Length: 168
Image 1 (spheres, one colour):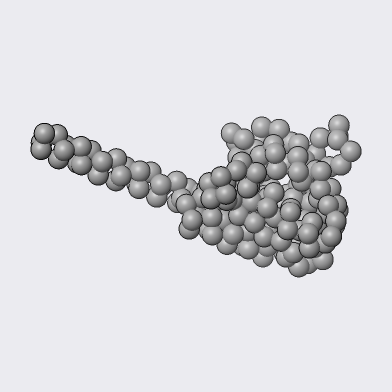
Image 2 (image 1 turned 30 degrees about the horizontal axis):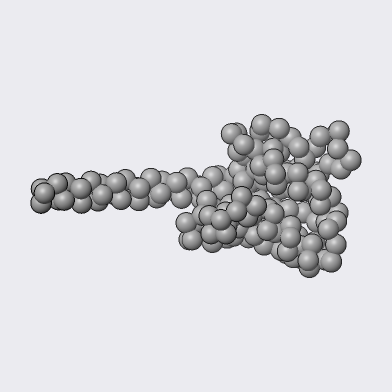
C-alpha cells in the first residue's frame, strides 16, 4: 500500500519539476482513497507557504470539511520541514510516510522530530525510507539539470558580454 501511494506522490513531485519548482510531492489518503494532492509551488505562487504538504492539507481539510485529519495518512517524497511538520501535528494527521530524508532541514527525524515530540498533544506515526532511492533520484535529476542550465546561461551571458566589449 505504501508503494502505491508513494508512486502517486512522486508523480506530484514531477509536476513541480516540470514548472521549475523543487520537486516535492505529496498525497493524503483517507479510507484507502487519495483525497488530496500537492506539489511544491513556492516560486510559482511567490510564497513560502506553498509547500506540497501545506497545499495538500488545505485540500484535504476542504474535502473532509474539517481541519482535523485524524484518520488520514500523508505520503511525501521529502521529509517535511519544521513548518510542514508543525502543520501536520496541528491537523492531527494519523501517519506520515516519507520517501527521502532531508539531513539539512528535515523535521521528521533528521534535524528534529517534531512529528513525534511527546511535549505536544499529538504525535503522528512515522514510516521513513519508502521508495527512498526513487524519491532521491527525482531531486538529484532536477538539481543536475538546473546546474547544467545555469552553466549554459552563464556561458551565454559571457559570450554576449564579450561581443558587446568587442563592438565598443
